[in-house]
Length: 74
Image (cartoon, rainbow, N blue to C red; front, side):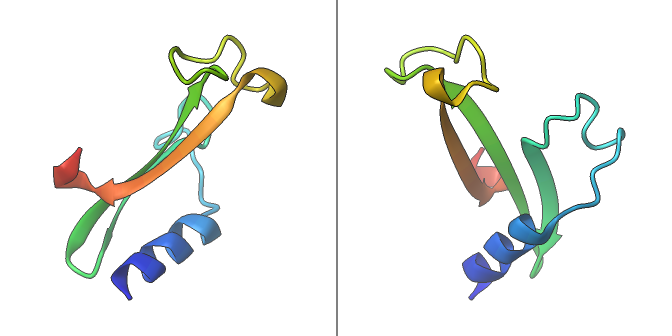
């Protein structure tokens, strides 16, 4: 149930500010839930998954990987 609540929190989050998202990319979020600290990140890889994407905004050359984990696991 905690995982479901964390996924819901990520999916509903809309309070992006320059303090928490200085580059306007909406690809990192940390939050507390049920006495646990979570981090959500999106990483951008090339299609072979070997290097960073040459253009993260271009879907034809980018695979996006979303990860939700406990902060201490990072």
